[in-house]
Structures are given as structure tokens and as C-alpha cells.
Image (cartoon, rainbow over the protein chains, first blue to last red):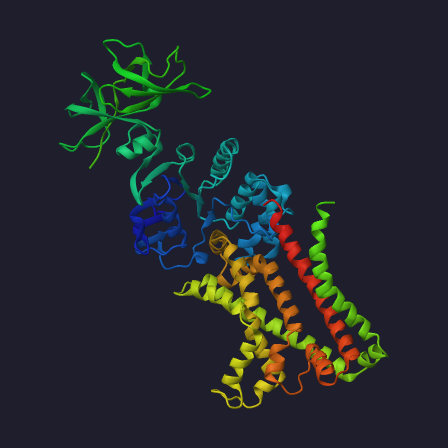
Amino acid sequence: MTPAVEFRGVSVHFGRTRALAPLDLTVARGETLALLGPSGSGKSTALKALAGFVRPSAGRVWLDGEDVTGVPPHRRGLGVVVQSYALFPHMRVADNVAFGLKARKTPRAEIAARVAEVLDLVGMGQYGRRYPRELSGGQQQRVALARALAIRPGVLLLDEPLSALDAALREDMVAELLRLRAELPGTTLIYVTHDQGEALALADRIAVMRDSRLVEIGPCQQLYRAPAAEFTASFLGAANLIPVELVRDGHPALVRLGGRELTAEPTAPLTPGRAVALGVRPHRVGVGEPGPDALHALVRGVQWRGTGYRVDLELDATGGTIRAEVSEVDGIVPGQAVGVSIPDGCPLVGVGP
Amino acid sequence: MSRTRWLVPPLVVLLGLFGYPLVLVTGESFTGDAWAGVLGSAEFRDAVGQTVLLALGATAGCVLLGTFLALVIAFVPFPGARTLSRLVDTVLAFPSFLIALAFTFLYGSAGVFGAGSFLYSPWGVLLAEITFYTPFVMRPALAAFGEIPASHLDVAASLGARPGRVLWRVVLPAALPSLASGACLTLLLAMNEFGIVLFLGAKGVTTLPMLVYGKGIVTFDFPGASVVALVNVVLSLALYGSYRALTGRRNRAALEPA
């Protein structure tokens, strides 16, 4: 089956600055792909190259089996929602939503019906006569979504669509997007975000990006549980990367940490001589009394987070700091010596060059 | 009390420099039957017509040319666009007669591109005024275009709008209040333009300021000059009122929560 979207060695430069290193990526029809990464990782640039807002310095962009690299944005037929919503301030909500349909010379009766349909779809049916400035941030976001959906795009691009909203509203909108997702099974969705929670909740696959290049791509669960790259482990799920000594490669491998041996699961073939680290999620780090079976550590900080505590610990074995999330701290205070336990079976990744 | 006393110096200056002369001019205008004489004369009616037509023509020309040039500078990437934008500010500081002088050198009967009597016709005055006042439209237009987020243009294009439609439906409506205030300002200034008309010495072009000059300085008809001057002031104030109303509305719109 022809992929809905294909990047073939697409790179983007602005003058001498590289905004996107050659990117090869395929997105299947009906799939939701999240481009996840910090600022400057190239994720939005990739989206702009796909939408036709920036011209690739090299490589080709394919949509539905057609090379669209030189095709202007107005002929690509993509739905785009941006972080700032970009609603036209001088138009009422209904006119904003109808904009794309009018540009496509859709018959007037059909425009009215389609506008009503998509506004109902996003729960904004009552707001057609309002101006954007009369709406809240969440409502504006829904209108922006309705406007993009009105033209019935095969591919919908969402560029950090929720990052301007407050935390509670963001949660609601993720649920709303999941509902919409289910109602539009044939639509391919590419979702740019720096929020791993949004990416994990919405996407079928995640493409992790950093420093203008693709680091790793894979199904959400796989990337979360068994990240092959050091950056994926730390960015997706905020895993502690604890340097260990490799005793024996294999499945499981055997590693040594502070005089103790642990089993670990290499997530990619290990390169001889390359340093390795355990990827340990904060909730898997145990904190208790110092003892012969535990790693020695010093408490550097304790923060109450409502549902539990976040404890920063300095490990004697490595000298580095790791983070633990525990439900109770039982009188643990900064400066106190504690015992730390790391479970067997954590992912093992290569680190450094 | 202590605060209000600070109002006294500016009020005294205002009344001394503007109020008192205006009162004198108003008083002078009621000498004899100057009002009836002036308002009933064909010369005055022609001057009003010519002033309004020239001002409207210059404004229309400035809006078209200024908007086009501002669009090119703002949206068509070319080297030197920023320098050109700054140059517009410099042109705003020039005196108007400089344009007339330059035009005489260029298009005058003995000029580099001698264009016969064109320069000394109403069309020559119109061209000079459009040249001089276009930056007055370009400046607010450039500011307005600069405020339109690139994402609006991108999203409009992604929805299927060609560049012309994006310009007509997204860019120009967003810049409309600025363009309108620029147009009002140009209309106001063009209505009172004196330097260009006098310097070009265009045949058959008598605007209201030229009529004031002719009556007051050439024929010493001070009551008649006062009547014409007052009519000019009233027209200008009416225009200024519309200009303020427009800019006020724009500022209020900008202050409304987005």
C-alpha cells in the first residue's frame, strides 16, 4: 500500500544553519505519528517541509505516492493546525472554518453544511457567529481544528497544538483529540510535540528528534520500554542513565554497578568498547535503609509532588545524581545516607560516541 | 489645584500661538461682505473643487502605490528590503518643495527628461504629491504587514488559498485600519499642500492654500483670504476628526483581549 507521507533524504538549511539533517521517514495511511523532541530538534521544520512552507535544500517529499517537493502549499491539500491557532481575527468563527472551502470553490450550500458539521464535531456548533477574540484558548484551538478538518484532508498536521493551553485544558484536549481520532480513521495524523505524555497518548509510533535529526523511530511501547538510543531513554520517560560496566553481553546481559551484578536487556547490539548505561525509570528506583544489598547514596533533595515524592540521590558508585519517585519518604531528609535498589532487567543502552 | 496650575503654561502657549490668530482671522473674515463675496465666486468654487480632487487623487494614488510597495518590501524577500524600509522613514523628513524642485530638474521644460507642459498641469502636481506622500501610507502599511504572523499566511495557503486570495482575504483586511489611517493622514496633508503647488507654478492650478496666498499676499484682500483660510481649516478639522476616529477604533480593537 502506498504510504500517505514519505520523506526521502529531506534536509533543510536556512543560510548556513542546518534546520533539518537528511530525514528518511514513512507514514502509513491512517497512522498517527508523533514527532517528539526538544526545541531546535527539527520536528517543526520537518512538518513545514511537508506542508510546503519551507523548501527542502535536498531530498524529496512524497504525498500519496506523488512527489510534491515543488508543489506550492495551496495545492497539497493538507490540514494544518499550529500552536498559535492562526485564526483570522477579522473573520467570524464560521467564516474562518469556511475559508478553505471557499478557496476550493465549494458550492455555497455545501459550505454551510460542512461548516456546521465540523463545528459540531469539535463541539463548537453554537459559536459560529463569534469572533476569535471572543473565545477562550481551548475554544480557539477547536475552531482551528475544525477549519483544518473542513477541507477533509487526507493528512492532518498538528504543530504543538496544545502547548499554549494550561495543563488541565491540555488533558481535556488530548481526550478530545483521541475521540476525533477514532471518528476519522482514514486520516493520517502527524503530531509535533515536545510533550512525551501527548505523544504516548495519541501516537501509534513516535519519531524522536534531536539537534535537527531523527534519533529513533518506533511504536510507543517499544520506545518507552526498550529505547535503543540514550537520548530516547532520557527524553521519553525521563529515565536515569546510570553508567555500568558490561560483564557479559547477551540476552540478558550481565552488568556491574557498585560491586553488585545485575541483569539487563540490551535494546540494540552493543558496540565493543563503547560505554553502556542502564536506563532506569524514576519509579523503578527503590529508596530505603542502607544495607549490604543496597547501593549507597546520599539524599540531595526531596520534593513532594502531591501523588508522591521526588528524591534526588547522589550514587556513591558513580558519583552521579539519579532521581527516584516514591510514594512515601518515611522521614528521609536531604543530606541523609540511604540504600538504593535497582531492579534486574532494565534496558541497557550504549552511551557517548 | 497644584496639578491644574501646570495646565496654565501650555494653555497660554496654545491660545497665544493658535487661538488668538484664529480669532483674528475669524474677525477679519467678517469685515464687509467677505463671506458672501468669496463663497459666491467661481474662483472659490473652482479652488475647492480642485483642492478636493487633487487631494482625493493624490490619496488614491498614494494608497495604491504605497500598499503595493509596502507589500513588496514586506513579503517579497530581496536583498536591501530592510534598508529600503528605513529609507521610507528618511523620505518622511524631506520638505515637500524638494520633490517639486527635483521634478523640475527631471521633467521640467529644460529638465533631463523634459516632458513639455506636463509638469505644469494638474497632472504634474498630482504626480509630485503622490511621490511625496506615498511614504505616509507605506510607513503604517509596513508596520501593519509586519504584525501579521507568518503562520496566518501559511495556514491560509495550506487551506487551498492562492497568494492573491491570501492577500485579498487575509493580509489586506488585517492591515485595513492602518491603511485607512495612512490614507486619512495623506488626504489631510494633501488638502493643505502649498509648497509643491507654489514651486511647480502649475498653470490653472489654484488650490485653497494657493487662494489664501493669492488673496492675502498678492491682492491684499485680507477678509477674503481669511474666509478661504477658515473654510480650509474646517475641512482639515473634519478630516482630522475622521482620522482620529479611525485610529481610535484601531487602538481600541488592539486593546481588546484576543
